[in-house]
Image (tube, rainbow, N blue to C red; front, side, top):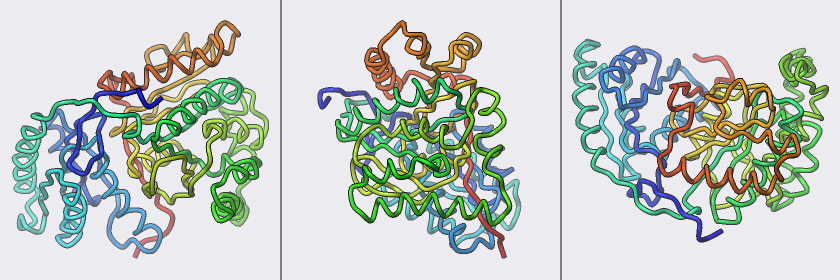
Length: 387
């Protein structure tokens, strides 16, 4: 496994990107429209905007700042253009990102006498300079241990639990064995199977954190009068053949493979070292994927049963299905067809070898269908009220 390698963009902080993006990042809803105009004028850039930003408190404020800094410091991002309306906040985020050694430029509405046209002009010029600078970077050989992956499933059906998620679990084990970082999340999709995860915890404290993460969200749902059956599994899952949250959970946790779980992360929290980690976060794919990306994941593996087109904007998202009908219909949305395993025409070991080869090919520059079709976005959770 140690011999496996790929070609990536080496960053000053020692991390390695699978992409070389200019990120146009709006720190608040006030400057979101400007950021989108700037990104449109810089077509090779990626734009992430926060629909909120002021008056956040507690967990929301912490997650918001972790996500902003996490997007900017993700290894796939080569340079960052920050656009905001709060001078101290812009300066703080810029300083945290610049500490990694990557180039950062920032423009603030307050410094433009509140003239958004001036802000747009300054931002386009600053972004163009960054884009030119990062275009000089070239791919070099990188080890498997330089990778961080997020593992996701969405719109699952029985083929997900039987084939696609166990297939991802084999990739998880291979990555962990090679010294990489792997994160799985979707806390409510551990419900009914959390005791199995706890058995694999590195310490009693990690085991307790896994169980408590599920019980806390279950209690929250009950306190709000939410019926988990009908919400998770959702109507699409139920129509596809999944009956209970426990059945769905047993399939979902298969993505985590068999490795020891080193810790439980908050949304957008970076792993402390190599190995397998759980992220306590929403099971909703846009929020879950963005949590992985802000935690440093350069790539994502995303299994689906009947089909799910959503992908991350900043990290290539490899879509996998074993549903024969979905694979026939969605062949330009699914990156890996595992239906041969489901139909008994291919051993899962052979499919895992082929998937790992595809993963390294995409890490080295091959585009996913989601990248080609522009399906990506980033969404950050918001839990409470703001001032």
